[in-house]
Image (cartoon, rainbow, N blue to C red; front, side):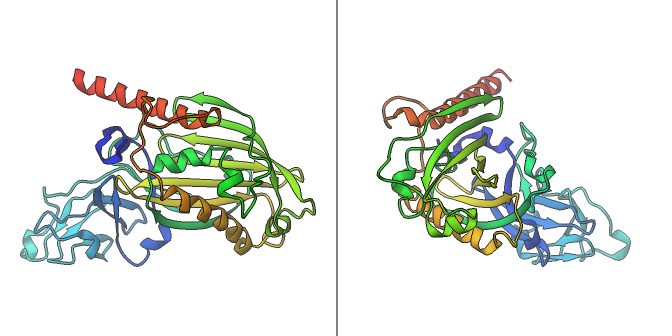
Length: 336
């Protein structure tokens, strides 16, 4: 599956950029191979427009904020939240005002410290995370591009068989490579995955868990939302809950913008955010290293290009669900 050649992917919400980055001006972002500009208007609303001025094609992300709107950095044409040209500075004062010229605008929202966007009307809403209602603290962990596909990142997130090897330096146990048993419950927009995974406790994890044991069990409940969003809720025997949200926003066919934050039911005094981030970063660096070696073009069919084993079930379900969604969209489009 190549994201830029899969039209249905335009109809999903993706986190694009940390909202705080918009304070000093517009920012560029490429989504599914399309160049966009993300900015915030004078009323505080985030906006998502085509990154191309309708006058002489300069990138609007090279522009600046002016009187609550976005001004092109080339000739100063001003655009509102919806992409309409509301002022052409070169016109006489008595000819100023809203025009019928515009650039394309796209669905945009702000949630969880990020600006989210889609290229067409989304099929499903931005997910609600129970940790927000439960009052957990939220820690922003990282925001960076990975040279891999979003589907590879998602499959890896539900793969119990890779822990012993990819994470052998952090929490994996090569002496016990058998993947933990799991169960999957499907929904219209994804599935829930439940599993109990025995892991070793390296020194940093012992400190963060406030545990002395050499081994422990992770009670894992992971939710996948099509196409590339996951929340992994880990409950430890001592009652600590560590929930990791990972989104792989498709920049193009070979690159994903990885956005990750975590929720915890403890305090800064219990586990400083800096140390929480450091441990999770070790784990994700191990994942990134191996994922960037994979083929970003993930086959959705089961024709033998890639072999499977029983623990691959979550990934196989992902591929089946995405393939079915694509086929339904193709059937609908052909009927119109």
